[in-house]
Image (cartoon, rainbow, N blue to C red; front, side):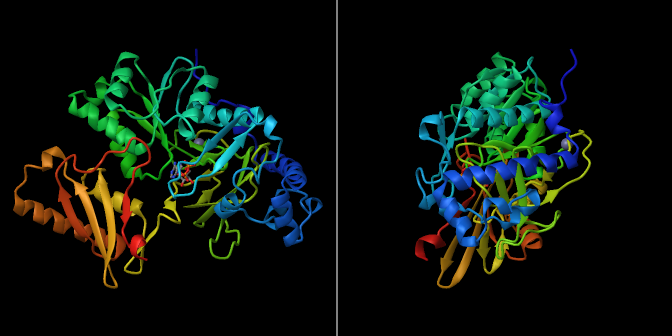
Length: 437
Ligand code: ADP
Ligand code: ZN
């Protein structure tokens, strides 16, 4: 039987004009629903002097007020709920990476669209009912596990609900069950690849063909490392609890950005300082509107993720707009010695220079001066080098990082296995300045 190319072809290949029409219809209804059922958002609209009747189509979306994480905090736990709690069947919660937990609610209908979105991502990665999908994202309140689990059910694949952790068991199940698709964070995928290597299992002996990796920023260099290490094609997937979970957007075989499920989510990119909507192709803060969710339908939610939107004809035939890989969240951006630094920039340099993906950035302050340290693990084959050659390597790496950032870090090449491996979202930055500020 021929593999299917799309999970929901009518939606995924819909002409752009029709997408806009559908979005307009859904937005008009959604604004009425939210205005009638969420007093908090009604107040925000009233303060801005905008009424549901003013929203006649998607082109009017800019009239609506934004919501941000602080609104979620202020209304915790039920303040943004738009249906009776009795109609909700599930909650999920953010992983609290930036310290503030958020609870999102789902009706049966909301879970249904969310799992459709994940099913689209799996099919785009070449998965069908003959496949065995190991879901090694955490299960529980975190959306990663449940999202991909339910998407895999919808596709009809054999689903292995592994959750994260117990890496030896991960490898055993992949081998014993001939798992073909692995879903986890990219940092955990790299750890799994490293563990296979240590056991002397080469990429061509691993049954995996594809991987769906997301929930944290990762570079194309990291993609190549994972693809090589596991002998697979690695696909990106993006999402956030506030909007539903993984599957807000997903990558296709072109690997040039993630198609946003535009029939459910409307994306804008804004200038984070002024709130002005930016044209496609310009980097800025990503903002999402849930067009047809019932329980927790955020309108114009500011994600703080920095990225670029591009609408281009894609070789996969999907018409949905793409978002480029997010460079990170605006709150991941470090300001060191007055220079903006994203951990992803450092990752790019390290992997280009053939270092391992295991690194940690530490920033502290001596007096009024920032101290910028990067710890990078040597690969086992690099570890035998002499002290002199290690000093030379550190110097060269300093130079490469300076060329990327304009500032010079202290580079420390450390022994293999000294940096803690991640089973979920990796901790790349330790900013000690926050403690003294
Ligand atoms: P938390 O905010 O606590 O981490 P979530 O688990 O909902 O909660 O994580 C959502 C966030 O994870 C997104 O806003 C984004 O910053 C990040 N993220 C998710 N997928 C990707 C991806 N593919 N690339 C980069 N960042 C991602
Ligand atoms: Zn595509």
